[in-house]
Amino acid sequence: MHRVLYWLLISFTVATVASFGFAQGKQVPIIAPSSASQASPDYAASFPPVENPATADQIREYLLLSGESEKYRTRLINTVDKVRYIGEPYWPESFWTSIKDEMRKANLTPMFIVLFQHGVSRELMQEVLDSYHRLGANHFAGSPACVKLGATESAMQADTAQIMLKETQTIIEKVYQVYKPQIKAARAKYMVEHPAWKDK
Image (cartoon, rainbow, N blue to C red):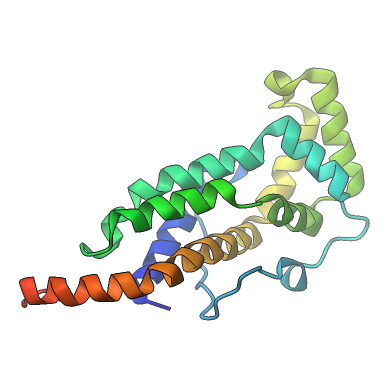
């Protein structure tokens, strides 16, 4: 993997996982991205479900009620501009725009299903859903179900960082492969104009 892309991915992970609900105020574990490009990460192979895990339908309903998937998508997109300083000056503007476009299109639900099935039981997820329906989204925070879910998610923090890193890597590498020839040509031109320049 291109060294700059490596640090770009690390910065994305720190910025997005650190702001991901339960992870606030906790140190985000740094996990190296995979060197192999994956068109569709096989999360389930690395993160097996707990005994009697939350069902896919329960998780989809939770994502709908909590809005966590779209909140995470928004954080991802907003983080693009925050980490641009890590990129090389000859990377085209369209490269960054395409990353945002790809993040808008990405199906994040499979990632969240694997994540929650890896640490949340069917019983706990049903308790969470019942609490959401009974209290409403505006009053769920601080409820017993919220506290239980938060404790479970905190215990999953390292795995959460790794799963989200894999998802981000897939998105960024997909765009980078498309732009690789253009970036290579732009670099050659930039080096002629700035002979003293050294890549990061």
